[in-house]
Amino acid sequence: MARDLIVIGNWKMYKTSREAADYIEQLLPKIEGNKARVFLAVPFTSIASAAACAKQAKLEIGAQNMNDARDGAFTGEIAALMLKEAGATFVLLGHSERRHIFGESEDLIHRKLARALQDDILPVLCVGETLEEHEAGNMKEVLKRQIESALADVPKEHAGDLILAYEPVWAIGTGKTATPKQAQEAHAFCRECLAEIYGKRKAGQISILYGGSVKPDNAKKLLSEKDIDGVLVGGASLDADTLADIIQHCEGIR
Ligand code: PGA
View 1 (cartoon, protein in one colour):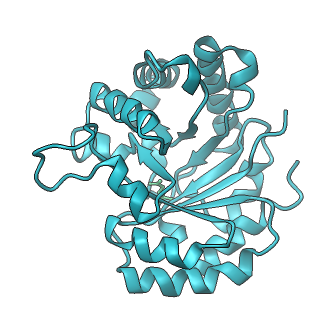
View 2 (cartoon, helix red, strand yellow; view 1 turned 60 degrees about the horizontal axis):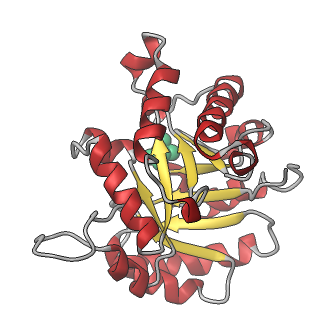
């Protein structure tokens, strides 16, 4: 089953809109002709300028968060429809920094995912266990719970409309990466969870990305595993040349 190879850069709270435009100008010529789909999750204020620069190119711009309501009196929040109109085609949901720093519950992530599907913006659902859960041997239990809670009651017509990202919390921004074998085992398990919800065929079509201290020197081995369909890159995506190097590793895979 040929699945899309996807590289997502997650800029977090870095780069102004002007810096975003300069970055994209630098990145585009370096990734021309590469078969990976490249996504950039940028700060809200950079979406419009990034989307304008990415136009015509094979580069998709998205957001890092959104509210679960269509609209309403929610000071400081942002809705899917606003993101879309600004040029975003996807949104990260359930990133570990949202779960652990901002206290987002599994129920809230579920409601956000349902809203993203309803308002037609592609959700990239991030899941992953903490160091404590990892050391206690609870990885599978945590992944199953996070996937099942987020995808509960997804209407049939939206079955499989998502990208999944496995990001072990202990590997995010720490310089520690899961070994390719560890990551493959987690990805295969995530796919089993998806198969229980959507059936084997649909689950076989969903791209599952690995995230957590991905760098040019570990990307290739991770990408060579059969259930790793791309990478979600934080710190190393802040430099256009470094992200381009990671994207180059998608050549020759599959
Ligand atoms: P990192 O971040 O690559 O800096 O570990 C990954 C992420 O937060 O998505």
